[in-house]
Length: 423
Image (tube, rainbow, N blue to C red; front, top):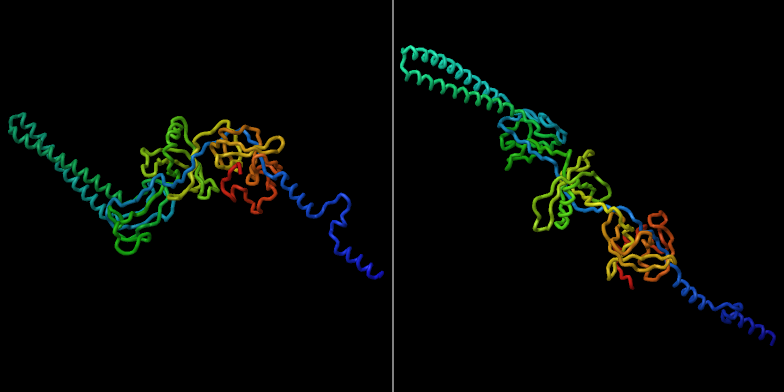
């Protein structure tokens, strides 16, 4: 009987419910979990925040542009002949007047000599005719010669004067043709690839034979000797919407409009310049107007036909309420921010955003300078939520708890906040 009683006692201890061993005042494990969940529901939401501040805000017009050389020249021969020499290197920077190539000058030198001989002959004839005219006029005064003979001699002198003038023009033309056998750069810039080799015949329409830069075989279009692109300064053309044109024209009347050229990824600024011209018509197909800007291109960062991102500084707001762009969300009723009060409670505040510059946006209405707004963690909030500010916007440790470990802000993962504020 004693053994049976001991066994029953052991079984009771092993299989008895857990609450039998709880101390007075403790609750069951299931009730503890429910209490934890209830406490977590009312815990503050960790967020990153910042304070709206008042500062100047530039107003930029962003566009996509194409780099164009200030001048682009196809160097064509002005006389026909045998290409005797090429005096440039491909890709070389040349100056205006620099020798680029030479055409065989010997045929043109002969033409010069012929023109000189013709001029000397006619000048000699003119000199003799003028002497005869002077003698005839003396005899006419002595009534020793007829007046008709004197008039004929005067006509002969005038005719020879015309011949001498024509000979001088022919000589000037022959000398000019000879000068054109030296092909020089019409302007400064960088030469392109060589289109014709030494030994080819060239004409006034281009190179008759092919070259290192041309395809082999017959050419349907005669290539130039070379092309020259002026890169310093250089220009960029870009379209802007026609609705922005009045503001741009108004600003151009009083001051220069600064322009920046950025690379394709908008990661590096290539150069800065100014607007120099606006096209004279609107493109009816796209509703845009072409703008031309000029850049010094001192470091040769811009190259013809290069694609660049253009930023035109249209205006600067002297005093604007500015917040990080990440603080602005969009819901069914429009743009809004979460404003934090003194008790760390958030409220949905509709706002009207204005100009943006980099990561910041000006607020036209709905927010005052000095008010605190949430910049990260918006997707976990609703109107009336209690928040805990774990970091200020822009600090190195601004990573509130619960954000995925991809080092990207909410806006980078989700794009613009597109959620209803009253969910």
